[in-house]
Image 1 (tube, rainbow, N blue to C red):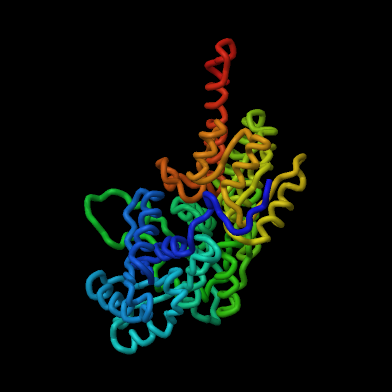
Image 2: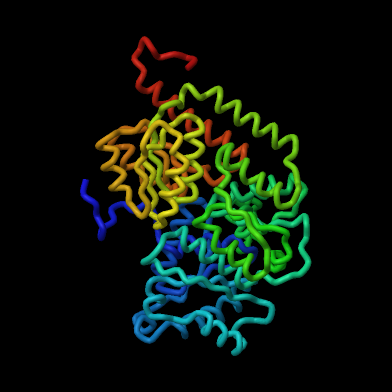
Length: 450
C-alpha cells in the first residue's frame, strides 16, 4: 500500500461547522448561526436533519461576492438584527466557515459593535466559535463550540455546591445525553449537562410547532457551572478543552474519562463521580451492570475471536474498541478522520492485552480502510453510513454506529452509553452476526435455535 499525504477519498469525517451547529442546538432557545455562504449552512442543516430525522433550524450570514471581497461584517450585523426581531432566540451561537476564516472576520469585535449599537437586545446573548473547515473535523468544531459556551457563560464562584456536577457528554446522541443525565440524577446529584440535545432533536409529537423545543441547558444553568463541585469530561477530543478552560477560569476541577460505552468505561465514569462527590450508584444501576455482564457472558461464544473494522469519531472508536476487546473480539482496523496522535496512543494501550496487532490510523479515510480489508478481511464492520460501500463490495455484515447514519432509523433514540446502552449495543452486534450465520448456513445446518 502507498501512503497518501494530499488526497482523501471517502473521508471518515466532515467539517468543523457541523459539529459546532450540533453543539449549539444543546442550549435552550439557541439559534445556531453560520457566518459564511448559504450553501455551507444548507449542507450542515441537511446533514444533521438526515441523521436525526428532525428539522434543524439555523441561520446564515449568506455571503455573496461582495462579502467575499470586503468582509462579512455588514452581513452579520444585518443577520443579528433580523434574527432577534423575527425569531427572538435567547442565544445566537455564531460559528465561522472556511470563507469567513480566510477573509479574517473578527467575530468578537463585530458582535461587540453590534451590541453597542443596540442590535443585540438587552438580556440576549451572542456567542461564537472559530471553526475553519480546512483543519480538524466536526469533532473539533463541536469541541470549540463547547469551549465557547464555557468561555461566555461560566462565572467564577467561591461557593461550590456539593451536589452539583458539570457533565460534558462529548459528541454523542441525544439519547446518550439523556441516559448520562439520568444516571447522575439517580445518584442524587444535580447534573449540568452541556450541550444537551435531548428533547431538542428527539422531541415527542404534540401536534404543535415550537421553533425552540423544551430541551437544552438554559442560560441560567450555564451560568451556574462555575459553582459546581466538579466537572466530568467525557472524551478527550470533544470535551477536554472546555473542561480545562472551566478549571482555569472558575477553579472547577475536572476528571477526564472515555465516553462510557461498555462496562469498563461506565465503571470509570461512575468511579470518577464517586471520587469527586462521595455519591454512590443505586441498586438498580448495579443490577443493570450485572445484566450487561451476564449478556456478555451468555453471548461470548458468538463474539470471541471475531475480527472487526471500526471507524468514526475518535472518542467513540476508543470506547467502542475497549468494549469489543472486553468481549473477546479483535478490532484489527481502527480508523478516524480526526487528526490527533493521542488516538493511536490510547488504542495501542487498550489493545495491548489482546492476541492481535491492530492497524490504528488517525486522520485517514475509508479508502485506506477498504484497502486494509481487501488485503486481510474482517468478520464485522462498525461505523457510520459511509461504510456501506465497503460492506456491499466485500459482503461483510455491518453495524451502523456513530455519525452520520443517513440510511437507517431509530439510532438516535436508543442510547449506547451506560450499562443499559451497552445491553442495546451488544444485542445489535450479536443479532447482526446471527443474521449472517443464518444467511450463510447450508440447509442441513439451518436451525430454529442458534
